[in-house]
Image 1 (cartoon, rainbow, N blue to C red):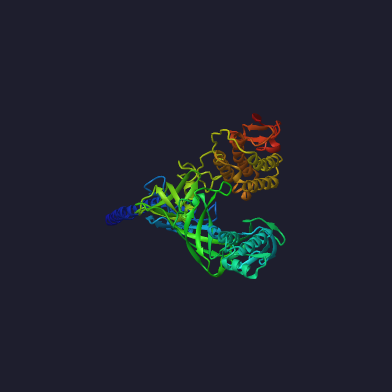
Image 2: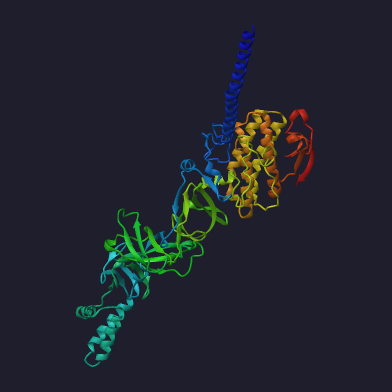
Length: 596
C-alpha cells in the first residue's frame, strides 16, 4: 500500500513537471509567435501600397482600380514621389512622363537667325521706263505700233505725222537753197530749223535731192523695249513733245517685297533674298535688297524692299507674284539663349517654361517666368529667366501644368498655387470647401463690350432651365439642361473679351467648366443639386462682375441647403421657388440681393 502511494506521488509529480515545462516551452513560443504576427501585420498596414493616376497625381486610393477623372488604370505611388525638395515643384514618375509624351532638352545659345518670309510682285525698273514723244507737231497719219506689249527697237519708225509747219519749213529750205551762194547763212539756218524737229542730216539731204516738200515724217523710237501704254489714236493732233507711247526696257526688273512692321528689325539693305514665282515652277531666283523704304504705307502698314534682278529671256513679267525668304540675323550677343516655341506657355503678360530637376528622389519640374525676345520662326530668343545648360520641357508642357493645377501648386493660371478645383470629390479625397463648393472669389465690376454681353446671355438661358428642372424634381431634364449649359459655355467667343475682362472671363469660365465637367455621369438628383450649387456661385460672381443682362436678377438664399450651411441661386423672378429641395420645400428661402 505504501509502495502504491509512492508510485502515485511520483507519477503526479512527473506529470506536473511535464506540464510546467510544456507550458514554458510551447506557451512562450505561441505568445512570441502571436506577437510576431501582430508586429508583421502592423508592418504590412504601415507599408500599405497607395495607388495614384499618372495623369492626375492628386488621386490617392488604397487599392487598385480606375482613375475617377480620366478612367486610366491606377499605378502604385512611388515612395520617392513625396520627397520633392521644393514644395511647388511638380513630381512626375517615368511612367507619367511617357504617357504624357513629355520631352526635355538642354538650353543652349546660338546665333539668332530667322527665316523671314516675304511676298511681293515683279515691277518695271522705274529707271528704264521712257515716254516716247513726237518731235513734230501735226496729225497722226500712220501708227506702226497699234497695241501695248509690242516690242520696238531703237531707231524703228513707230508713227508717221503730217505737219503743216514742217511743210512750210521745207519750202523755206528750197528758197534758201536758191540763194545759198550769196547768203549761205540763211541756207544753213533753214537746214537747222528742220534738224530741230529731229530730222537727221541724211533726211535733210534727201529732201534737197528730191526738191519737193515731204508731207509725212516718221517718228523713230528713242529706245528699245516693250510698249506698255499707247496714248494716241490714228488721226489725233499732237503738239511738239507730246508723248504717244510709254516704253519699258524689261532687261532688268524690280521685285518689290512687302516687309511688315514686326519683321523690320530683321531686314536690312544688302540681305540676300531667294524667291520663286508661281508661273515658273522649279526655278529659284536670287538677289540682294538694294533699297528699303524709309516710310511705312499708312494703309497696308508695310514698307517695300526692292530687289533688282536681271530678266534673261523676259521670264519675269510685271505684276507676277513672288514669294521669297531672307535668312536674317540679329547682332550676336554673348547669351543668345534660344528655346523652341513648344516649350513656352503664354498667359497674357507672362511667359513661363518648366525647368527639369533630377535628384536622387526622382524627376520634378518647376515653373519659371521668362522674358522673351524676338521670335525665330519655330523658336524664341529668351532675354532673361534661363541659364545655358538648364534642362526644360519642350513637349508636354500643358500636361505638366495641368498636374500642377490639380495638385494646388504654382501653375500658368495660378502663379501663387492653391487648392485644385475639381468640381467634386474623387476617391475619398478631402476638398477645400464643403460639398466640393467652388471657393468664392472677391468680385469687382469689370466693363465689357456689347459683343461680350451678347456672348454671355445664352448661358443664363441654359442656367435658368437647369434651375427650373431641379425645382420640378425632374432629373432627366435637369441633367440635359446642365449638359446644354456645358456645351454653351464651350461655345462662348473668347475674342469678345479683351484686357482685364479677358482674365476675369478665363477665371469664371474655368470654375464653371470644373463644376460641370462630370455632369453627364451623375446618377442622382442630389448630385445634380450639388453641381447646381457650384454653378450658381460661379454665375452669381460672373453676373456681379459683368452684369450682362438688361433685366433684374435676384440672388436668392436657402439656409437649409448644403447640410444647413446655406446656398444661393439666381432667378429672374422675386418669388421663391427652391431648386435645392424642389416640391418638398418649394418656398423655403429669401431674396438676399438684387442685381440690376
